[in-house]
View 1 (tube, rainbow, N blue to C red):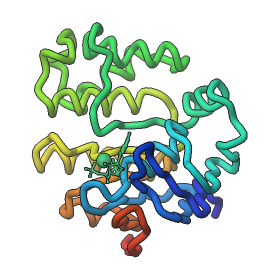
View 2: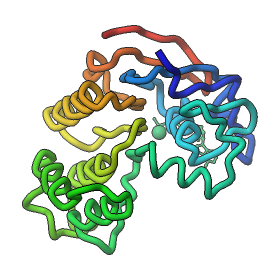
View 3: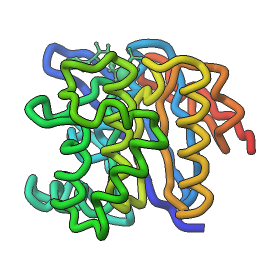
Length: 224
Ligand SMILES: Nc1ncnc2c1ncn2[C@@H]1O[C@H](COP(=O)(O)OP(=O)(O)OP(=O)(O)O)[C@@H](O)[C@H]1O
Ligand SMILES: [Mg+2]
C-alpha cells in the first residue's frame, strides 16, 4: 500500500491563538475512504484545508502524494492541487456569475477534460439538476448549490477528493445517493477520499474513521 497523505506532528495555531490542530500525526493509504468526525470546532475543516494545501500548518510536516507541501510555493501548490486534488467545500464557492452548467463546463475546459460537456450533463443528471442547468447559484436552494458544487468537484480526474460536510444541506436520501456515487468512484477509479461529516448515519460507508476533539486525534475506528 502507498501512503497518499502523511501528517507528522502538525499544529495549526490561528492568529489570535486558537490551536485548531494540536500535534496531529496520521496517514491515509491510496484508495481508502476515510471519514473525519468530531464536534463542531474540533479541527475537521482545518485538517482538510492543510491536506489540500489551501492553508499551511504552523508546525509539522505534510506530505501529499509523497511531496512535502512546505517545499512548494503558492504557484506550485496551485498547480499540484489542480492536477490531483478536488475539494468539496463546506460553503460551496460556486462561481456566482455563471450558470450551474457553466460552473461545470468551465472547470472541465480549464482542466482539459475530454468531452467535458457530456460529462457535465451526465453528472448533473445524476445529481438531479437537469431542471436547473441555466440557473445561477443564487437562484438555487442550499441543497441544489451543494449538489452543483459536488458536480464541479467531480469534473476533473482527481486522485484525492477532500470533502467537507458534502451532504450537510441535502436530505437523508440525497446524502446516501451522493455517498454511493463517492463509493463508486472510490471503487472504480481508486480515488482516495477524506470526508468530514457530522452525520453518524453515514458511518457505514467508511473504511476508517478518524476522530478529532479539540484539535487532537481522539481515536480511530476501522470499519469496511
Ligand atoms: N480562519 C480562522 N481564524 C481563526 N480561527 C479559526 C479560523 N478557522 C477556524 N478557526 C478556529 O479553529 C477551530 C477549528 O475550526 P474548524 O473550522 O477546523 O472546525 P470544524 O471541526 O471544521 O467545525 P465544524 O464542524 O463547525 O465545521 C475552531 O475553534 C475555529 O473557531
Ligand atoms: Mg468545518
